[in-house]
Length: 303
Image (cartoon, rainbow, N blue to C red; front, side):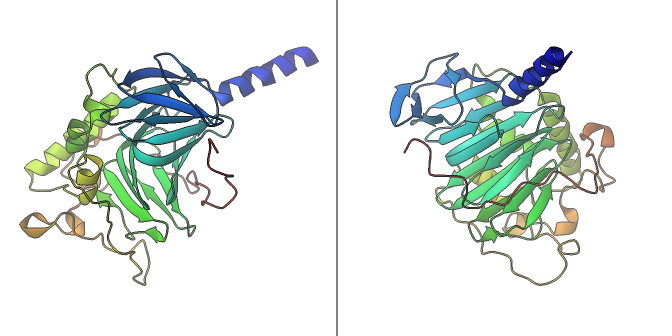
């Protein structure tokens, strides 16, 4: 009996660790472990704490055995600690997509951590700025800055942050159709469909319905993630006093196309939208909490 219990625990531990391998690559993709740089090939197994990098006009996809997917854009540097299910994004554009039934993945950059479970999320890391765009989520994505301040993002929402904190007290709207049609991490020929593809299309369809009623979802985050801007600058940190819950979102976009916070996309509250088109959000009094970034992550990998 003890032997059976031990084997069961061992099996669970092995699954939790999750093997990862290269399931797609384009052009210059490499791995770095113990300062050794090696060209990656399809089906390469990626060991824990191994850095994966990409060159110009390059990208790759890593698959975990629990069906979670990470896609890495050009000029990026990434690593994954399997035992802690910790993704570290040093620079570049990344996509993380995972099933809600599997263990949470924590993504960390120089500015934020994000707890991802049942979501498809894009990260753009440039210099000291991090931009996050949620294509879909059924659980909410909890983002925590270095000051310990947390925000839960829902489908079609995003936020920007620097090491000084998040740049606004409320999320920005994200145009999901634009996000998925402009980023190579969605459009590159040869990429297999994501497991959460139907949910992403559901959010995009709901937004299209809202657009027909005059709403807009344009935001700077869309442009940054799609590399339509040459700057990674973000607005000044929002230090306005008052309750976060009662604060109105800043206008989305600029000029004549800007809209007020009351017009921003909210799948749960907007009566114009068909709720069947929007992935449900699981409410919880204690949502998944990402641990604030500290100084105990150890030295950079590969050094």
